[in-house]
Amino acid sequence: MDIVSVASRSLGFMKRNGIRAGINEISESFSIRKLRGSDYVLPSEHDIEVFKKLAANLSIRPLISVVVPAYNTDPFGFEGMLDSVLTQAYDNLEIIIADASDDKAVLRAICDSKSDSRIKYRELSDNKGISDNTNAALDDAEGDYIALLDHDDLLTPDAFLRIIENIISFKKRCKKEPDVIYSDEDKTGWDGKSFTERNSKPDFDPELLLNNNYICHLCVMKAELLKKLRFRSEYDGAQDFDLLLRAVREGATFSHVPQILYHWRTSPGSSASNTEAKLYAYEAGVKALTDHAGALGLKADVYNLRNVGYYEFRYSGDIFEQRKDLGAVGGRIVSEPRRGKITGGIMDADGKVLYEGLPVGYTGYFHRAVCQQSAPALDIRCIKLNPELEEEFYKITGVKYSEHRTPGMVSMRPHENGRPPQEGEKIFDAQTLPEDADIKKMSLELSRRIRELGYGMLYYPSWQVRSYE
Image (cartoon, rainbow, N blue to C red; front, side):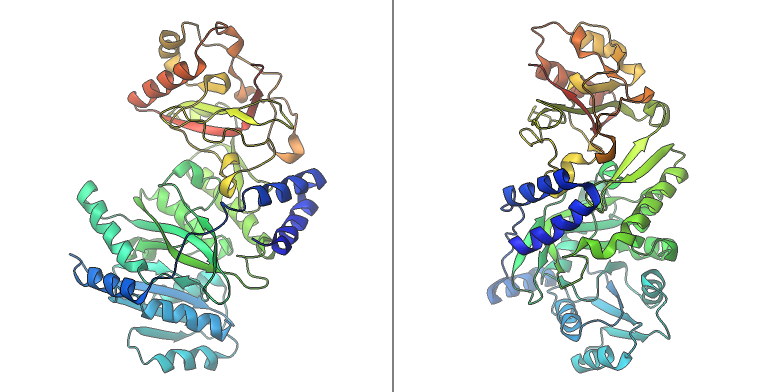
């Protein structure tokens, strides 16, 4: 990421959130610029031949329909996208172009020039928006699975090979095929030869999905499910987010391919390079999440976080009354609430603090440090416990579980810094622990016991308390 693009993005951020937040954004952008790189290397001709041999020997060969809504697409970008599909190592596919462009002759001519029967070009009489245009493409899809592709982005040559391999391995483990498969992605320049900002995604986490549509690209869904759900035009701009949230409500199974299979191409004014260009989309995301909460019977308010495309899903009232599946909710420990660093909070199962050392005000890799997410383990110094687990808490810590409104507790939300915790945000009174308590050991033992009893744990980063160690 170059200085110009960082400065441009940060200027918009500063306008929305203030000078201090903008300075933090600039500082963090440069401090993690190595993490924003991509290790993707264009495959050699030998690699391509290997991909083709692997594809030819797959045990299953379902038809994949690639649906592409197009509107006044740059011819160069469109042809690159089309070629990235037609040259796939896995060739049992079709691509449906739903063209709502003002001048239909441009993209039609490119499609005709390929002389490939796998191309289905559909001319739309008028532009009805991204959802309705995509639905028009869905109507012509005959595949077992449907892949969603933007009209000027690029797939890696082995994209669908890896998708089918994932379906096969998932079925061996789970005795059924996944409903949704997604991959890692990165960004590429307009020439499609330079790569930046690898997005290494976690395996499916429904909690994280309530904060950000991290699945995004590449997304492949069972045709039966996608044709049932379809896209809804009232969510245009976040229509794919709305789709995924409804898939969750349908009980869909998700599987992750931890490889870059999709290059999000940047161009002047595109949402890949300029998040300000799609601010309306993030408001549509708030609507999708709010409706999702309502459909699940959850009482929650949804807010845009400072980084557009990221949300806070804030439960109102007692979270355990609504989420009986949760055993604990935990925030983070900081050395100083405003200028300090993270010292505790969400941990892996071995006790490594996931965001340790990150300065307060920074958001981390793809802003995940400020996103709610499933937690393998939580720090007991900033924890709220399900009342059903208080006896387990006593067995492990030797003290009775009690709560208080922690004076050092602040909110991450920029316009609410310093707000007192709400009634439902009382947390464990860590001052009741003995001075020589082994915090990490207790935290890990309690977290392990919570998992054994079949409960989940939620990291809630807007809860933040100061450590006085």
